Length: 150
Image (cartoon, rainbow, N blue to C red):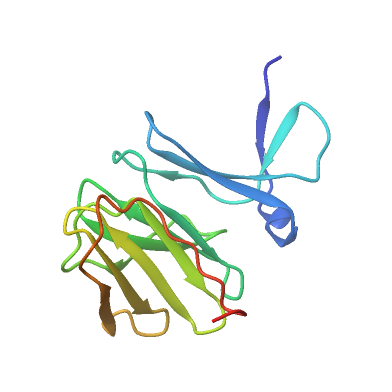
């Protein structure tokens, strides 16, 4: 069964949507999960990039999508309804296969596989970033945070 994709930016207010990346094409999309038919309704302007396997994180307080640009070694962000992406972190970045938003502390945690480390950057000022873990990591791939549990 073929799925049609429609763009409905107002659906971004829906609390049930899924953001995903297509590995080979480098496209990042968000679709509404409340619609029960063969048409996929997009809730964000798709990100079209040449890098593959980006890490993704979403901040529900600001409606920002964060993603890694594995070709240019940057972490980018964009509003769900906006065409433009902006640089979040562009220095000291290698291959970032995983990231997570700490909505309570207002930080972005990310894994840099190339240096086998975990970093944290402030969502308010990404120049305020810190190296958290640098030893005893073997090919870190992903990260999850639980702000309410500490």
